[in-house]
Length: 353
Ligand code: NAD
Image 1 (cartoon, helix red, strand yellow):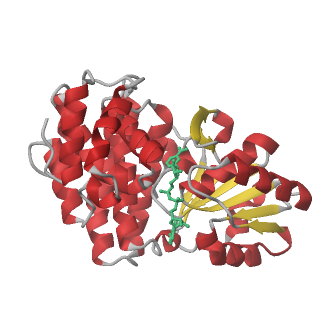
Image 2 (cartoon, rainbow, N blue to C red):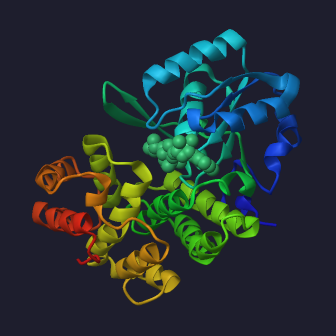
């Protein structure tokens, strides 16, 4: 049995197929009586199924969770939560839904149960990003971590193949950046390597058969490790680039991570080759960035930023923005270096330092 506590996690985490049909068994100890189920509009039928399953403990269903946690949506959800008198939220979805659960916990103190359906990993972090007037601000508070996380491979098995790949690469990006984080620890490195291996071992099997629940469960263990390590150490260039591209050019979250990762890895591997060497070992080959790019390509991941709708004329501004207020990074961030990186990522070329 996989034990997350071995890695220093103090969250209650369960991995098991069918958990979503047996919710109360794993949350009975919390003494919750009125649970508000949260989903996105696209996953409202899952929300209704869970509400039916919770029976008299259901306080309601709020299915308007939205990417990047807009404060206006959170305020609507707070009003609904107060009206129905909920003492807990069940966040069933990806990072958007889990973000809404965190935003509600922050404002009302409700207990959170997370039922993740992507690999983004927000359920394991004490981080919340919220958007107001088109500005996204991020905060960190240990109380934001959901009390219980239930990883049910049946729920992630419905993730379309393209999203499976990009969401996995989004998770891998957290682990790769953890390897060279300024505040890395041996335990964080161990977790990151566990997460990278879990995806390297199981993602090809998941893509060969998306309903292979054993392989899906291993990908969820990878998501847990990558999310947990994201909560432990600071992120660097890769995340700065993705936040710039997502925030200023409205590029989709997981796809942008998937495309940028090999390029950011190449940039930093030039400075810290030893720290990134395990990535090459895990994904095959001798060069970590090339290994990630080949892996992404073999899984059918998007490779070119131009396919996400950003024009070549935007790359100069993207480079300007990405070098402003840079995050700490192991290699000095230079405007020409970032402009070259963006060009390669835009064209979908293999990464180069
Ligand atoms: P998401 O939650 O936005 O989901 C994307 C779409 O896929 C939604 O329409 C959703 O309903 C649908 N979907 C999700 N799971 C599905 C499934 N199993 N089957 C079918 N459809 C499914 O996507 P995400 O990438 O998980 O989350 C992105 C958001 O999470 C961003 O806002 C990002 O900033 C945030 N995030 C936060 C943290 C953190 O630690 N705070 C970590 C990672 C991501």
